[in-house]
Length: 598
Image 1: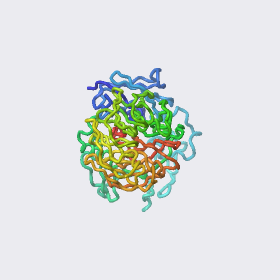
Image 2 (image 1 turned 180 degrees about the vertical axis):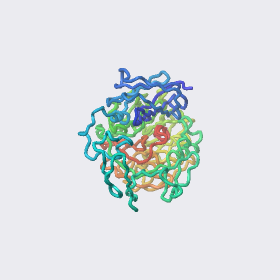
Image 3 (image 1 turned 90 degrees about the vertical axis):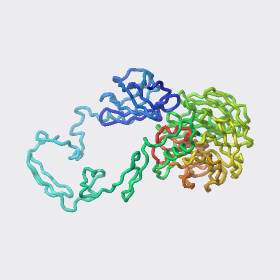
Image 4 (image 1 turned 135 degrees about the vertical axis):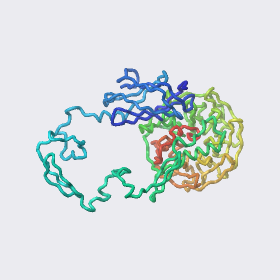
């Protein structure tokens, strides 16, 4: 049975849907000890308030028992009655097995629209009805009788395509006829003809095929053939972070299933909200991390404050100050990683301390000093051991931070010199792949043994790559900074491949890589005027949409649950948004997995 609740993810996985009556559907997710819960919750109580804290419920609370939670997801239908939504603000408080979750969730949009469905008695008269606004489609069957009519007869006038109109007395009848060839496709309303309206003896059914068990129709081709895709119940799941590396083949298979077969329309770039931060000569932000509350944290480089982007409200908020001043052109932090308990660990570049941001309390705190060479690190990733691995820039050692004990450990030396690596990627093998910048070799760190291995040489020159992402093929894709080619490393075979040329700017082309819902790798444009898109299955590159602006644009990005990519602004004044036009992440919690959110 259900034991305890660790946290609820309010902004990310809570949804409200309203129906024409007073019923709403509430969806949410529960975590236990940092992992999605799969169990039966004995009792959930829901209370509706008109303020976010304090006060009394506006109606009687509702209690649901034996609520099924699968992979952290649950859904209940709530009916607070017709008077519950009067157009004013409403906040939902949830109590799970005696534990009240905080904060209350604001209900906006669909549930409040119930109030608009109710019209006060006597508020609609003839003055409120526009001429010709009421026709037969808006009058219910049997709603009009002799008592509602002023005259004892009607004149039926036929419109276009009908014959037989004339005067008819009440109670009488009249026959209207349709001339031959009067009805064509232009006279049939969309969705007016369905299976119930089709005589299968007279009309041949276009789709005669069906999907196998565990699959559903994704699309229908012009010739009637169908394309099937797995349903949610049959999609393989990514392993919990602590089990990454135990079965690399199964992990790659799950990635390929979750990030494929997704309709991709031409991606569109747009500028998001203005952030208003300053950083002098230093780029404002250096990385982006998806948070459990559904918002994206922008890692401060030259900015004095944590950056927070809300994709639901389409707004930017200046978070808490971190208290570190950039030294010269060295940003305070470069990149970050999400811990199992929901905090963000910031990799110190110019800062002396590891940085910690708690999105639940919106507080920043300094972690331990690292004592490595300055500037220290450029990249962070969660390892299966629960440690945060910091990618060394000028540091001679791998950095290791334990979020449970709040301690820093100087790991093994790598021997690649200054400016060695920029970015760290968790591979299906459980290894941490360090993205080479000035290093001649791919870096490989094994968190289980605490050992470092110098991987294959890449031969792409100095400042070759900046950032990387795991592809559904199991390969790690390096974003080209000064390299002319996409970088490809296979952690299973240990082989590096020089990928296709991108043809963009000769220097500082891209800074960061993000896995998209379709399985493509999105390259965040730095000096490149276009977003980069690499297809790891076809091993091809093509230029995406123009991003606008003539300066260093973005440093890294993050995938959000609706399938869009959020770019962290370098010198641009606005957050960048790439709308992939792809379907929502399946399931939405996948966006938080360390194999994806890195």
